[in-house]
Each structure stands twice: as C-alpha cells, then as structure tokens.
Image 1 (cartoon, rainbow, N blue to C red):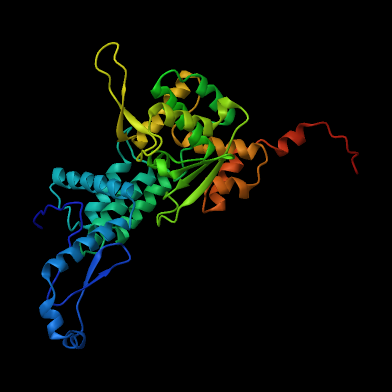
Image 2 (tube, rainbow, N blue to C red; image 1 turned 180 degrees about the vertical axis):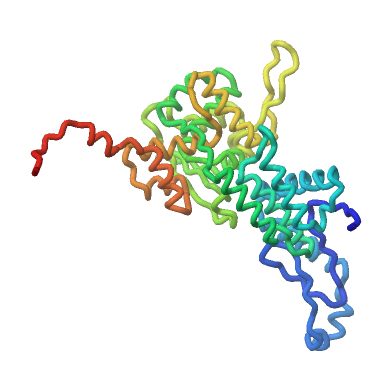
Length: 382
C-alpha cells in the first residue's frame, strides 16, 4: 500500500545543482537534464567558482514564473481547483492522490459522470482529467490518464453524455435594446452595467476580456473607439488585437458614448490607470448608495449583470455573459454581413467555429421545407 503524500498545486522544482541543466519542457514545467561529462569538464573552473548561488536561486524562481505563464491564470486556477477536488476524493476513499494509480483516476472520473442529478458535463470531466495529468507531469511522473483504462472511461463518458455545447441564448440587437431599457441609468452602477452590455456586444467580447480592459486599452478618435485586447482565449501569447467600434447613429445603442459617459461619471479619466470596469462596495444603511472601488470587476459578475437585465426586461432564454458575443455574431449573420468581417470582430481562429454560429442564426433562411410547402407553379414533365 502506498503511503499518502500531500501535494500542492505548484510544481516541484527540486534540482540537482551539481549536474543539471534547466530547460523548459513543452508542458511548461522544468526538466532536470544531466550534463554530459565533456560539457562539465569544458566549463572554466573560475566561472564555476565565481557563480553566485543566490543568482541560481533567482534563475529557478524565474523558471517557475515562466513555467506558470505557459498557461493562462484562469486555466491554472481551474487546474488547481480540479486537483484539490481529486485530492479530497482520494482522502475520503483512502486512496493515494500522488502518484495516482490509473484505477483511482478511472473511478474518480466515473463518479463525476454518475452522480444522481449532479453529473458533470463531459467537457468538465475531461478538464478534470487534464488537471490530474498536468499535476503529474509537473512533478516528474507519467500521467495516469494516459493508461488505456482511463482513456476507455473518458471515451465511454463522452459517448454516453455527449460533447454538444450548451448554447447560451443570443442577446441580439433587438433583445439588447429591450434589456437596456430595464437598466436604471440614473445610478452609477446602472451606467456601468449599461456600458458593459453595449461594449460587450459591439466588440463581441468574452467576459474575461471585458473585465481585463484597462484605461490604456481604449483609444478614442473622431470616428469612434478602438479597443485593444492585450490577450484572450485565442491569443495566449499576448500578440494583441484591435477592434474598431464606430459611432452609432442611435444614441441608445452607441457603445462609444456609453464608455465616455461611464469614465466621466466614475471619474477614472485623464491620468488615471487601471481597470475600466470596477466593483461596488455593498452599501451600509437603508439609504446608503453603493461605493465605487478600485478593485477590478470579476468575470462572473458580468454574467449576473446580463442575466439580471434579461430578467428585468422579461426576456425568455438562458442568458449569460456569452450572450453578448453570440448576439453580435447572430445579428450580423442575419443581416448578411460577410463572414470575414464578422471574424475581424469576433477574432475566431477557426472559421468552422464561426460558421456554427452563422448556421444557427440563419437556419430558417431559405429552408427547403418553405419552398416545398409553397404552391408548385412549374408544369410537371410527367
């Protein structure tokens, strides 16, 4: 029976200082590679003697930083939570979490899929498996998820539960207009929420992109607003992209004017820096007003803002933060906007993913059944 060991979510960077070469592995971790003898003997003795061990420690810390940077903060957070959940499962069952046996991982994944009324989606279960594999690789062990028994369990879960994404309702331009009327723009919080809806729609932003915006990412000119996206889900390397948002003729739907109003009313213009969208402190007292804080708005709050506006407007459907992005793509598709122009804003790397939105939005356009049910004016050749 293996003895239990505790393991943190951070990789173990124990190294052999006398004979090691720190190299970054493709997974983002640190691999200890032994020097060849000729490489060691060719190194000047004076250079070895003068090397400061504190500098080596700093190099290790830098390696840790860059290793973590191989994955987005959101991915690292999700992996840490997933690993903690697996560790608790093993603790309760009296099993070893690290290094885990393939049978342990298979049983854990099966338990996630077979919970009565609480079964996880296949995509979530696959992410849990990826977190377990990541933790093992980072600590120098072969991932148990590579074993055929685990692969078969994952394949069975996918086959039984499917991988079809659960689409959020699209907040089209027509529905957006209704949702905006339900927001009280007489308050600072209402102005912020209205701006989030308009800007999220106009730039087809993901919720993580909305909350990541800084003041310096906004560039105004006489034509409108350019939003600079420093990094995103499809731009993990941080190459950056720019989205042009022109001025709208309808003031009620003008994202540019809404952003200007929010920045002015929130007094975060001029030499200010930091987050564009910030949270409010809960009011104390019956007549107290929420106080604007410097703390960046959390991405989950964006989803709640959209949902509350949809409910207040009496809209039917499963709305969330993604509804803004889906609403832009849907509204553009039904109006015949070219795919290449939609893609310039949505920034989809895969045209097929974008076309899935377009097909869903235009599924009733020129439907064959419509033509079949129309009176046939053609003369039969029979």
